[in-house]
Length: 252
Image 1 (cartoon, rainbow, N blue to C red):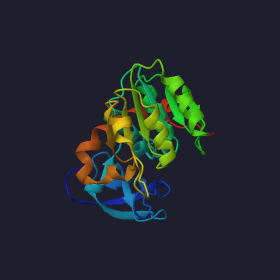
Image 2 (cartoon, rainbow, N blue to C red; image 1 turned 45 degrees about the vertical axis):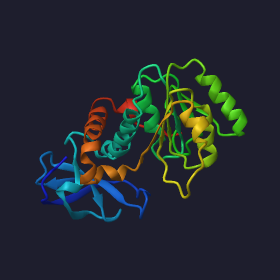
Image 3 (cartoon, rainbow, N blue to C red; image 1 turned 120 degrees about the horizontal axis):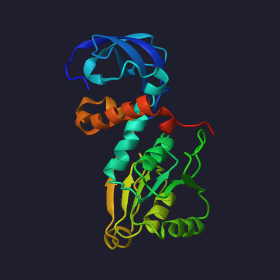
Image 4 (cartoon, one colour; image 1 turned 30 degrees about the horizontal axis):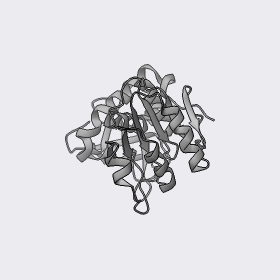
């Protein structure tokens, strides 16, 4: 990341469609930057139709000059997915489950596979992308049938971690019920209302490690969050430079 507070003059190369986070949807893009060490950055933009703009350097993410603009737009989503499984301490051979409600579900699947998870389960079908090869897709149907299916697939797992970005109480309930002893769960949705959790039976008695977080890619542009996400940004750039075919989504 860039630590000074200078202004960069940016010439925008490629723009990501607005991302709906907690507030008003915002846009980020790839731009060439006068004064940046790498010459190119990812930056928050005031709108999708901007061609030139001045932005505080602290709000920019430097990217490798050889990384294509198309691939660079995936850095925030890939980085936040890497962060999610690191937060859940996902280990080789453990089962991983994630919901297909976040716009970045593909990267949650790919990064779980890269960490050696087995099996990797996607709860629900994504509308725009096919699930990564090697990911088992569970269709969200009747809760009792889904719960039985989940428990059967997790029966032989040596450990389990899940990321719930659904924001749906009925989906979260199934995940809580399916969590085996000592499972880990990241609640990562921006929920419109609180949810009720049977804390004693589904958390306390099982020894569940339950955490809250956000899969909002715009957090990567916040200087206050730099210490948390910078390492994952660097990992994401390295992956997209060396093995883009291993992580980029395939249209479904």
